[in-house]
Figure 1 (tube, helix red, strand yellow):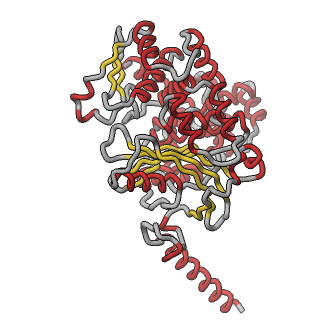
Figure 2: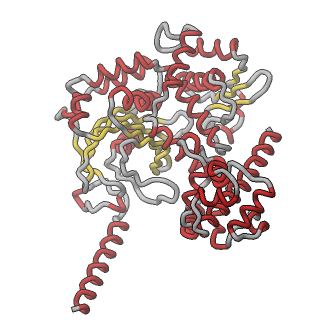
Figure 3: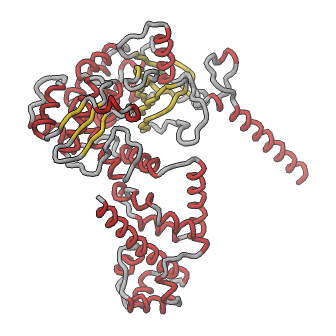
Length: 509
């Protein structure tokens, strides 16, 4: 692993030298007013070779560099130096950062050179922009993993979160090991495959004696006989998912991976992507595409809302609400042609935290690092958590997840979204709870696909983004959790601008 990392750093260093050299050549060529063909001709090089140089793919020999320097009116040492002008300091910083070297350009049909070419059109402005980005990142303590996970979400949304190769792999695996005969898949069958075919040793006790590791569902230990430490607090259905995900790593031959569930540190985008692929495989294995699509079709054709259909699906596949809804997110956009959003909230110590999202609807979600606002308590995900908490406090909580539905209408835009969701206690937290919802933008197409959207029994709730941005007061909202400070600040700003414009108009006459 150490050798691989050193080699990787050496490759990054060489790529950085090539990139900076190509950028300096391109910038000098543009400053000299030479187009690509003119410059190539004077340097006695082909235009295609110059293009490769400027994109950082090629590094010419000394004699060619000397000729290029002569044509550009630059000194040889100046051209080959990896130091950039002081005005480009932040561009140099970002080029040499691990973030850029790890960013998955190829997954978006891009390469780092495309970014560099964009920057060299106006390098001073680009450097200033990058300075601002870096400053914002420092201010909100943003880590590389935040960018990498955001890149993964973008990658998922570009592909509508559906990956045929992973679906096929899960189907092939089920056929090979005869897992497609009945549902739900049994825990015993997955244990037998992972132990006997893939040589794993499963341990259900080690994590119990490690309080500091109690938040991990599992820990993978590589070796001649791999060990998988399982948290004894997990429910059988959660253990099945962990085992199915491990089978995904092995069957898909995913080498770069996290060794723990919910890893504290992300090493690369490849790790993030491989972790996602293994989880996707697990969901497709536990909830086969054909069966799940048939259940969704039947569910959507109902004329009125029925929570029991969702609860029946949980029982049929023996999965958690999170697993079921995330499987919905993989299949509904592809096979029903409608976009959706997926939100998962955790509630602990009275705080609500958005821990996972997939936002194909471009729903405006105030979120992220540094957010100190209170999400609108009228959102279905938060309402379910509050109802669950009330049931627990009164001793009326059921082992069955709490189910809910609502149509949410944004206060100012009047956009409507149809949402249904679950809330349940967290297995690894004595006082924590979790809610998941799937939501759809309401339009004529959705009403044709999900027939019960217009069920009059479904409540319509006016919502906003956060309490700090909301104008509802008093009896208009009885669940407000914070004063509308941001709204008040915006109103003061608007009044100030209005007064300034009026004064300027008066004095100009």
